[in-house]
Length: 71
Image (cartoon, rainbow, N blue to C red; front, side, top):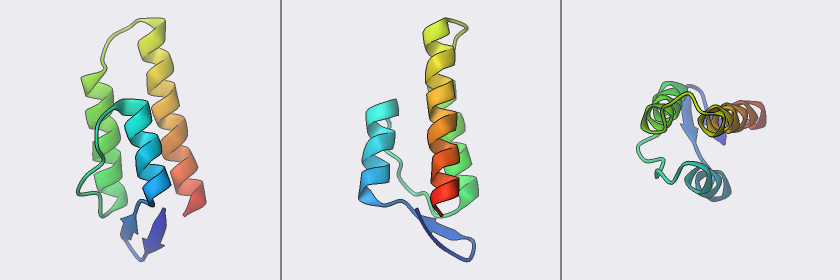
């Protein structure tokens, strides 16, 4: 993730990883708030209480945290 002030830009490998993980394209992500909204949208799309859903939510959270550290 490239950060300039409050603006961010996902690199191509980061965007591809998110698509592989969620099957939802990360578009119009310009700020950390946009990225958080994307994560919330993905989690809402894959809702439930199964262990698989919990694991997917955990993976999404881990990827979000990894992006923050990379910036």
